[in-house]
Image (cartoon, rainbow, N blue to C red):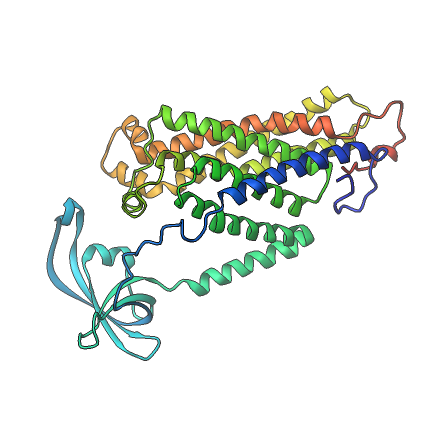
Length: 413
C-alpha cells in the first residue's frame, strides 16, 4: 500500500513499510467484514418479490413502431377534472397510426389532450407500443408506452466512456470500471436485498462501503493517500446513516409521497419505507462525498510537497483553507441536484400557489430537504475528518533546511 500510483515522480522521504502493513491490515479487515456482511445479506432469487407489472400478462407484448400519421379530432375535452379528480387539459384528441417495425403490422391508438401535450408525437417518431391480444380470435389493440431511446442513450454512454478514457487515460478507464462495479452492486445486491426484506439502512451501509473500497482503489491507486481518503469516506457514510435515521424519524417522513410509492406498497407491502428514505440519503451523497475526501487527501499530499518542513498543525490549517472552498461548492452541488430531481413537484406546488412553508413541509419536498441537509452535514464533517486522517498519514515534516530541488519533490504515499 506504500507504492506510487502513477505520477511517475519519486517518493518523498524514506519508505514506510510498517505503516503500509498496518494500513493494509486495517483495510483488509474492513473489506473482509464488508464481504461477509454482503454474503449474509445477499438475497436468493426466491426471496426477491417477482410481481406482475402493469404491462405484463397473457396476450400482452411490447413492440417497436414508427409513427406514420397524427390526426387531430374534436373529442369534446374542455379541461377540468377527470378520473380520480386528476386535472385534464382542454383541446383536440389525436388518432395516431404507426407501423410495427417487425412484421409491418398497422397499429392505431388514441391520445387525449393531456397525454398528447405530454408526448407530442409526430410523423417519423420511433416509439414503443403495448400490443393487447388476449386470444388469437381477438383483434389486437394498441396503447402508447414510450419513445425508443436505446440508440441515443447508447451513443451518449459510449461518447462519455471514450472521452473519460482519452482525457483521464488509465485513471479515466479505471473510473469507468468503477461505474460498472457501482451499477452491479446496486442492481445485484442493494436493491434486491431491500426488496427481500433486509434492513434498507444496513444494506445501504454495507453496499456503499463495498463500492467505495473498490472504486477508490480502482480510480486512484493503492496508496496511503487513497487510504486516508477511504477513512474519511467511511466516516461520512457512517455519520450520514446515523443522521439519516434521526432526521427521518424527527421529521416524521413516511417514505410514501408519490404514486410510485403507492404502487411499491401494493407490490411489496412489507417494505420498510422509512428505512428506504434513510438508505437513500447514504447512497445519494456518495458521489460528492467521494469527490471531497479524495480532493482533501490529495491537497494534503501536494501541500506537504510544497511545504516539507512545516508541522502537522500548520499543514492541517492550510489544507482546511482549501476544504472550506470545496465545502461551499459541494453544498451547492447537493442543493441543485436535489432541486433538479424534484423540479416537477416544485413546479406543480408553485402552480397551486401554496405558501413557502407549506411547500417545504409537504412530504415530497420535505424528503428532498431532509436528504439535502443530512447529506450536506455529513459532507461538511467529512472534510476536517479526512484532512486529519491525511495529515496524520502523510509523510512527516523534514527537519533542517532544504535545497530548492528537494522542495520540488512530489511526495507519494
